[in-house]
Length: 403
Length: 222
Ligand SMILES: Nc1ncnc2c1ncn2[C@@H]1O[C@H](COP(=O)(O)OP(=O)(O)OP(=O)(O)O)[C@@H](O)[C@H]1O
Ligand SMILES: [Mg+2]
Image 1 (cartoon, rainbow over the protein chains, first blue to last red):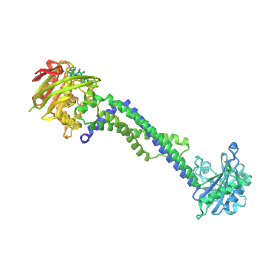
Image 2 (image 1 turned 90 degrees about the vertical axis):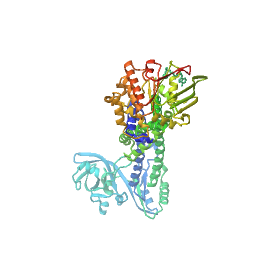
Image 3 (image 1 turned 30 degrees about the vertical axis):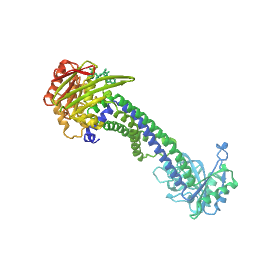
């Protein structure tokens, strides 16, 4: 090795030219390893993406809160979405010890228009504490005054995306907007809330005080989509959750409601993540194993075809170790090139495939290090046996193999 | 004391059940500075003997002293070092590495040498001496047979060995190139190198100072 290092330049030239000599073989080894690496990079991205998704769901729920969402009854009626929970449930849950505030989410998709421009969007009813419990923050203008919850003002606040859609960069405050046939005045814009895991934006909604909503938008509102509960800081979280389930169970079957807490989301996603990591990790290991196997075979072919070259190198003084180093260097060169190519392919598939899977698109920069490490290890392991075989060739028969 | 001293060298090959005894007890002494030709018919074991002298193969029995040192006591790394530093090889089919240019081919033995130094200049000077100064960036495939063999000669000399072993160095060359190659070997011999030449061709062998003949695994005439 010391001698090889002294003549580093010649050594590197020799390694690179040897690979270049047979581009087909090199390319084959390269594509094997890069596909393995690409799947690895993609998997890391998928895991990181779903982790990020988990974080955003948890953030959306807010800390110390419980979400009770309506189920849709038994599965056969999925297409006729009638909510199963109602305001009576809210009344019952509100009184559980440890709950600070409770509100409900009632919404309906409506035709929204400004002058001749129109689109569908969700109109949301805001009860007195809705904006507080659901963590809305003002962005422009104002939220509703207390008296506006008991009269029937035709006012609303809208999300930033809706504002952008109808008004572009001009000020939406004071502008008129029609929900079905009623014209409302925009008094405020709420701060961006981001997207649901499904990718649906929460910022193209329009919020109307509850009484106005009932009068002008949707008269029937006993049934609601979801209830959100906020806990006192001192509350025993798990106990409150079990109480909530108990109270709900009194009036409903199991299919009628889903209790969602940051903890259940975290648990579910943990299991999901774990399964995903395990499954995909295994898949990428298999991919790497296969690429290692392919590479190993290519190097065995290399050793066979280039036996006489090994023979002459040995004759003119290469030690067994020097021969091993030569092949190791060739394999590492292919591996590192494969890591680079694989990362590019991986990043491209992240760009194209993760949106289809509904996973946030994340480019895991750390996986570049992982790619180089994994492909080097794969390269090293796969070249070990061929290189050893090369170093142990009988010199005389290796030389004669050319004839 | 002789530079090379072989005593009772036997080489037996096993082919399945069959035992083929190619060398049946060879005794030779080669002095420093000699130019010796090993001759004999095809299949008589000339190359086999040369591989043993060149430490590429080891005898089944017998003793081989190089400079008074028993070669059989050396391990693989020591033998590699010995081939690298003290022996130079020239073969009938050149064995130039096809993807390396002339200069790189010539420098390959330095890759395995512990010595440092300006090998590039040395390679350039040696290539000039064999009229290849202008061909350093050529690939082997772009050279004639005679040119290839001259590259191989320079490669064998790059680490300045004492002994040069040549197995049918003119076997693939026309008569003009053959003469050129043999004249280079003669010159090297005059400069003090010990040359061991294997050939079945009397004309080639005539450049040597001493000829030995192999027949039936034995030396028949000295
Ligand atoms: N590894 C081996 N196994 C079996 N037989 C072998 C082996 N190597 C050489 N032989 C046999 O030994 C004999 C001598 O071979 P060698 O190459 O030494 O002859 P040579 O004198 O150099 O002939 P040529 O002039 O044709 O090169 C041949 O018959 C060959 O078949
Ligand atoms: Mg021969």
